[in-house]
Amino acid sequence: MRVLILTSVFLFGNRLGNFLRTKGIDAIVYNFGFKFYDEVKSLLNEADMFILDLPADRLENVLQKIREVEHSKPIIVFGTTGKNIIDILKFGIYKFMEKPIDPEILVKYIREYEFRDQVKNRAYEKNFALYTRNLNDVLIVTVLGYLQPDVVEEIKKVIGNSKKVVVSLNGVSTLNLDLSVLKNFKDLLESSDVSFRFVVVRERIKNFLVEEGVNESLIFSNEFLAVKSFT
Image (cartoon, rainbow, N blue to C red; front, side):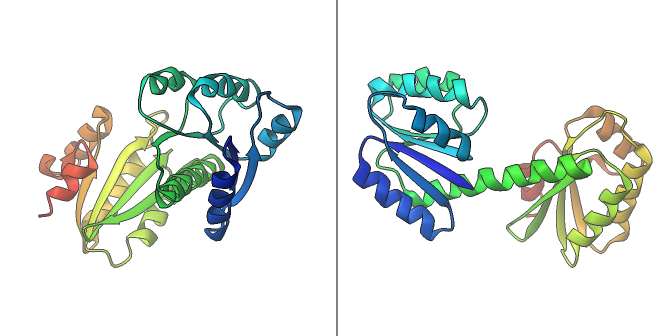
């Protein structure tokens, strides 16, 4: 992940860039002047993410110029709360961080986006991806993309020796949904030595699980409620 820091305070930008490099994040620092120089435009092409630390009266113009060159790359903006927050939302910024910013929080945001991008790429390559995390000794598995036979095998590996599992199917496409794979998925959980919950909002998937014998008390609309049900 290469980050471009556009700042009007070079000392701060340089310190921030050095800090990000200690975290393994490639950072370019550019002391931004009053014009959108061609040099900046070339740097935009090289970077994966932009961090803006600029005066509020110049921020909107710079965001507009960036979006003319890079339409979708993530932008993190440093600033103070106020009217300018509403004004810049139209540019599709990824995060707004109120000054003084916490560098560790910034790293967290960068890592989150980097991981999300990796998941998206895996989903594109395989037509599905699994995103896992642990919360209160509960393994949460989010399935993204299309349900296909490989998903069942991947989830079997992911579950391992876990005793409490929440499976979110909210990222599953219902386009050409293979119900036989969904049944195999359900059978895998029921035959494993785990206590499980489903997170489902799509009625078609929920109704099928209920028809296959899954108790409605094991199906939740969000992960928070599913995890809480184990307590």
